[in-house]
Image (cartoon, rainbow, N blue to C red; front, side):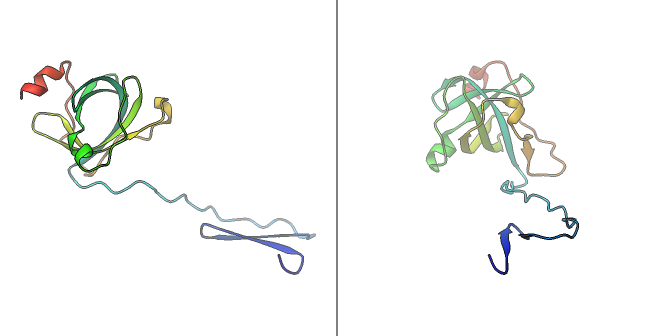
Length: 143
């Protein structure tokens, strides 16, 4: 505060408040910064609800209702895992193997309401190798 005015600094802006008879100033629109981490070209980031767990293989129901299998061992080894639990939402980030399983190097808890999930992401602009969905985790365990 100085000279009867209050100065408020925030992300890339400075707002000055005080008594005045002049009309309010038009403020520029400031875009919110993208806080998502960059993905490598072969990485995927998906959200879903855990429906089953067998060892390090987690079955996740994605937002479109399909089941996706996520191998959490890489995340566990790298100490980048929030322990998943059945019926709870998660975020899994990793690469897709030839078996169609997402080998996650990061597993985090997510908001329980799918409407609050950000879109699933792929590191490549022309993402052609997407995780495959399957009905049975047994098929992926024997592969």
